[in-house]
Length: 306
Image (cartoon, rainbow, N blue to C red):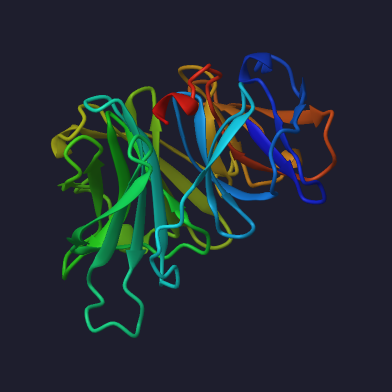
């Protein structure tokens, strides 16, 4: 898990293996990563131990927190002013290449508001390539919108032209998009909020409904067979026994899910089977760090591509 204190220029890491869900609060120690050059705003993706980072100057970096190596991604030359900007990061095994995907919804000054421009950066080629516009708009996000990596595809929830919401999946191998339908039984128009996740090799959706305000209930849906719309299954419905206004951060075990709202004092481990919730206390870093995401420690080298 990656943490970034508000008044500190360093990132910190916490090992998820330290988490013991049988006790509460869970006490874990943070380790400072002092090899980076700039304060980071967001972590936009994680793959094979590498992170896609976005700094305060809107530059992109690929970093390996384990080896303490980093590489600046060259500027794409594209105008970054857009309604919504999405990013994705993943590994193309067919070409032994890491790719960064940048998706910009058209600005209000453009004539076509129903498509988005797509750029792909190849680490092996160290260059950007512009793809044909995709006929979807990303949902509005205040921050850059990270894609969900699963099965060599990156996923975003989008709104196609004159159609209901859908999941769009980008193939890292052939660099094409295809749609994955959302559950038929869900009315997304009345949902207060919803998030897309990938845990245990499956896509998940968490929806929040007002019943009525300020009370909420939450639904958790899972796609049992990837790419098959009829395999969507509602796992559970629950009330305020977990604060899912927090976002899921990662999976600790089969049914232990780490959640947080960008403050370390609000990190929780929630057991979906037993509905048991444990708080997490972080030691060894300044107070009030934001939670940026998770990664797996590896020795993957950025230098081998150049």
